[in-house]
Length: 636
Ligand SMILES: C[S@@+](CC[C@H](N)C(=O)[O-])C[C@H]1O[C@@H](n2cnc3c(N)ncnc32)[C@H](O)[C@@H]1O
Image (cartoon, rainbow, N blue to C red; front, side, top):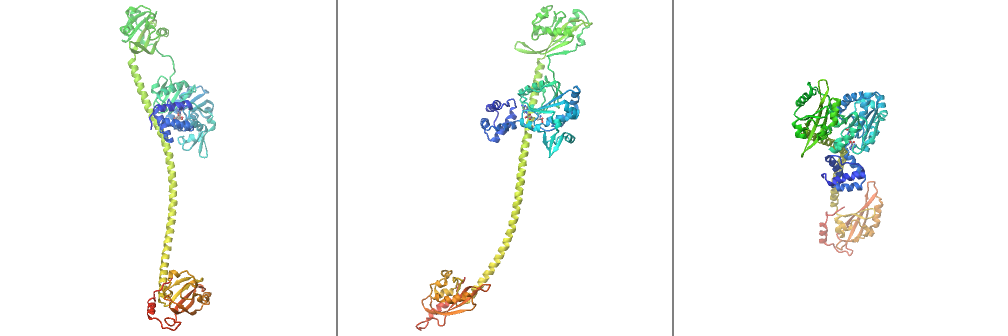
């Protein structure tokens, strides 16, 4: 997958300028992973190609937007934190409100609304439903319009309400057709709206601001910007409730933890950098006069120190003050307001006046002081010095060099920031994984469905297979029967052949149309035509030595089935061209119903071996030749 680069930033700028959505403040690691995911879906090779795709396919922005904005959420997400809010935070917060004072709550980054309705349930439990309706306003915002639409419908399925305790589910949801509708009368107190944490003005005077698992997607700079808006949004004693990955360690000037582990913070009111402190008893010297004043100054720690009398003259300054600010013993007795230290690096005169007036120590924190090439960070303490009767003697100015501790603090803050970033990264990766997991889950469900379909197809195939198997078995049985019958037929054929072999006559079997069905070898010998030339021919059309036309009446009679045998003796010419007398006996070939289904003609040479119309004796060699053919006839 591609790494963040110039073309990625161009893509973000394009989205900002053309779609009005600014992703530039989002952490790059997670953001690129999400965009890469989308690119893989549409098979874009790099960011430039994807940008072109976005320009052509306007609907792609919604898909990208939905992929980037991770909207994992649930009712009572992190139950422990909600329990803490219910038991520890809400009671004291409600106690500070007037009995009929409005309670303003903001769920920022509310996704599909589960968080806002969780808040509604907790507050309705704390106040009672009636008071909740009159006093509570829950503003629930997100940048994702699709999420807001779901939130406004306030309808969830069984899986989504699984984390709602049974008694709350019963009390705050109406169940219709397997879905759970958040109670309509309470829903009116939850107001949904689009608000971009990065670009839009915050809602104000908020008592409880819940912004969970949203900040972690932004880089440090954008988080800072958002946090100062959230700070602005809160009422003076307002409470900020973050997600478990969002520590806020590096924004202690805006928020101070109520419970760091549970990420609950209180707004730190913004005021001047001067921190007041009660006058310490040590600051009141027991002795009087200038000596006492000097003595008191000496008692102070070895910091750069300057003592100024009640009437504004420099009374004392030590060596450190001379080293740091160039104020020396020569200046003792001069009005303090005449030396540069009175206004540089910070305007001290008004703090001195204030210390006089209020008789308490004033501190001016975090003053940058440029000394040569080095910048020192100082904290100045202006302490009033009084006598035993609390009469004002003057003030002592002590300059604490906090450069080292500041650097340490900054390093600590930096480490904290890195820790926060790493933790947030971990959490957002975790949420991405949850999303990916959900995607995988649905792929698995699809696969399971496909698998079920395959299984049922498989079962159908198995059934068909079984049917085929049994058909096959039946076919085997039929086949076996056929074999048996074929064997029987073969035997019958063999038997018939044996019978026909025993006959000395030529045999011709005719069908009712007088076509030749059987022509045995003896007939071949007699007439000189082979069986394959004869079969299927009309008997009366045969061109042989037998005058077949003269047999017509005999065959007719045989076929009409009078049941008797008919006989005729005809002069003929055998295959060798010798004249013979041939006796033809015709008998009916009867079908099973007794009707004639053909005619059997037996042809036998009559009387003498050869017929000689002129009375000559027969030829012996021919007779032997004819004998040789006996018993070798064929039949069909
Ligand atoms: C992980 S969800 C957290 C939902 C809920 N707060 C919770 O903790 O269960 C993050 C939400 O922040 C929203 N979000 C992301 N960027 C935002 C922005 N710039 N302004 C407002 N909401 C934003 C997303 O749309 C998403 O609904």
